[in-house]
Length: 255
Ligand code: OAD
Image (cartoon, rainbow, N blue to C red):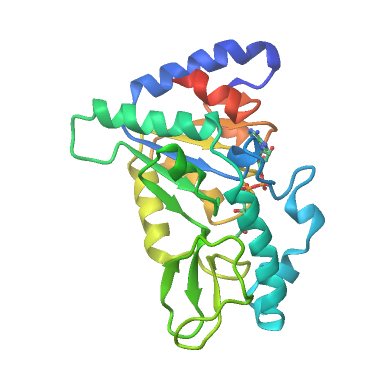
């Protein structure tokens, strides 16, 4: 592995640039850290959401069953925060990487798949096109009765909790603790990880499964691994190049 200490950063950045220049199929896995510099709170770090709130009160089917209004108030607050912020240089660099790989693609395969654990839409707003939201999307609502899903970007949502035309409660179309990921989304992410030559992991603590298993799936299939994170993670020892710092500073340097 190359990298880690501050004085190695410039050579690590060049090593990462070299790796990126050698490949044509990339999977990017992002977590809350990529949106941190936009002003969206992460989950586990200082000021993280799970330092202030208990997931079992707000992010489980049982919590929604007990008090749908409370759960919706929390999601409404998060929707307000996300609506008020803008993509940062990290989101924009990833969108540019997708565009560059597409422009240089010779085979009719998707050159970059961006797999995110984030429920915000900052990757799309920065211009990324091939985005898989493993943990759902905060702007989508799903009916707990008829199952219908639609985007609803109203901020704030009022009245709470929102109700479907069929009369049942609507919930955020996100994955809560104890729930399975959408099988199509997960299968697409695994397929991309198995087929890629390089996996770039950005701003995730790599603690939440199954998302955290994607880099290992890619490594097992022979891919290289670049990690960009403010702090070391369980993945760091497995990285070919580990860049420690802010994604908004480092990712633009990779292009
Ligand atoms: P975490 O909050 O667990 O981790 C954020 C990671 O980003 C940490 O490793 C930080 O060191 C790093 N980080 C913070 N700011 C950064 C910056 N500016 N640049 C680079 N790195 C930075 O967030 P996730 O890994 O996304 O799931 O959490 C995974 C899942 O746990 C979430 O999707 C959510 C949560 O419970 C569900 O709600 C299902």
